[in-house]
Image (tube, rainbow, N blue to C red; front, side):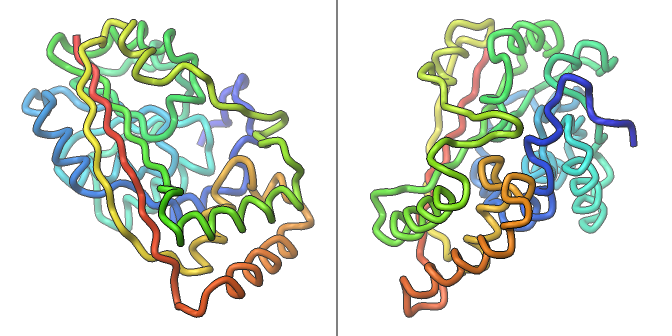
Length: 269
């Protein structure tokens, strides 16, 4: 496999791939069904899953028989995605290393859809949408998948607060990201899309209740750029121990009930 692109900060998700694949919540079938209903998958053109990570979106699409070009700049993520797809005997995913700035040089075929699952915020959003305008067929679209935990739900808020406190104890109050820090932009994805060639928007919402064990919550934190094994370094085992202890003390049940709120934004011309 070729090395990560030079402009990519290889420390951003260093060491997270196995946790990302195993413990990230992923997306329910309802989101894929909704995208299928509202998009141009009936065309012969493939899908680009940009910033694919370990393939939560790409694998969901491939399970419907769709050809997917899965692109990510992190070699560990792509390797884990290849492994996960192979275990499911999925053969319609073309895994590629690259960033959003390089997609124009990848000689991709005309695309029906470009999906992005919790990756758009890492990109130069306006620039990549302009690039995609020349790559997606006239009736195609851009689709943004995202999910967040509902902190108004008591058990969800409880474990989330405990995890945040332990992360800050080990790594400080600033949200770390690779070699620097990260803060969310005040400009929402929908606003960026609305000003792009894909400004005709449809936003769909879904909610799902799940159970998360202590192990799953700890693993989920280690999948994040702000609490990655690379960020924690030699303190990783102590971090796992402390967070496990705090979570175990907080409940007498085998798992925390959690509520996840999903959003699917579809942008068309």
